Image (cartoon, rainbow, N blue to C red; front, side, top):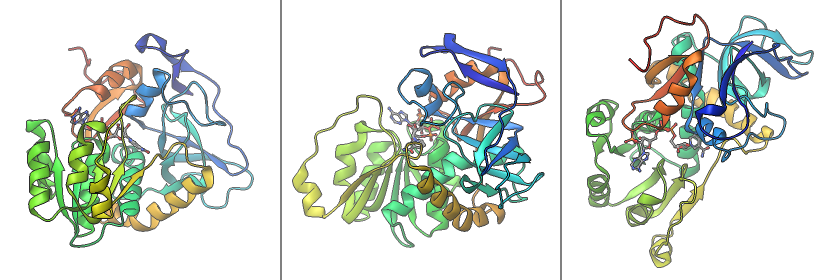
Length: 330
Ligand SMILES: NC(=O)c1ccc[n+]([C@@H]2O[C@H](COP(=O)([O-])OP(=O)(O)OC[C@H]3O[C@@H](n4cnc5c(N)ncnc54)[C@H](OP(=O)(O)O)[C@@H]3O)[C@@H](O)[C@H]2O)c1
């Protein structure tokens, strides 16, 4: 197989593209051939030594998610067979053209999604769906999504709209607000988004996809009994919060991560995603957004691009048919 590898921690100097023996699926695992692999901010943090993979995952191959075609099954696999198209979560090893994954952390890809779109779904839509579920978002609620033009944000906006919520999105990049509005949200710079949410009586749910910079405003923008879900924080982010505002609103602040959850919890979440979100993807009521595709050999440019401001949706590596994409430096 071909994969992205990290030789230690550091900058892009530790990144190489390697050819290795294909991984062998364990009893309950399948081997998946990919056409595309999604790059996440967490991969860059892992390269920098700040987001280690969970035990049992490939220690030096980044990549948190997978989409592709099953080409081999472990002895005890019952959910899938060879040639099934599947997508889901992995603890690591996703930035490769061959990936092993536990069958319970996979769902079937609906026909509505081609390979590129399917690769853009799992981490973004599962994170967004899980965060909205933890907030208990319902029809008629107000949802505020902070940092809405990235992978998770564009998924959260669409899922919020599909659930019947009134969605307000804070988007720093002026050039991306129109696209987020087209997804059904009111897209504004953060100060105006907070102001609008307050004028609506506060948000029942806030998804924080940026970090500490918004926390005080978030608390002041929660409706009574609202829930603020902290999905992202920069390393070292710390905040001081007016606790009486939290008490007065009887509000909740929930922190969440996907990667560090025990496998059985991830499996349950992926099964819920398969029941609740995959049908929306199949009916094209929600759809992943791809910002840019790089060749696997351009992984370092993809890592730089993931960190760059102003993206709209996901960044992908194409794991096959090398060499026909434009030079990212051009
Ligand atoms: N807890 C979990 O399990 C989990 C799962 C998935 C992702 N995450 C985290 O959630 C965050 C979003 O993920 P993603 O895949 O959507 O990332 P992404 O595609 O890179 O999007 C990041 C978003 O945050 C905005 N942003 C970043 N810094 C900002 C700042 N200082 N002020 C205002 N906006 C800022 C970006 O706006 P610009 O375009 O203007 O920079 C963009 O809208 C990341 O931090 C990621 O690591 C957490």
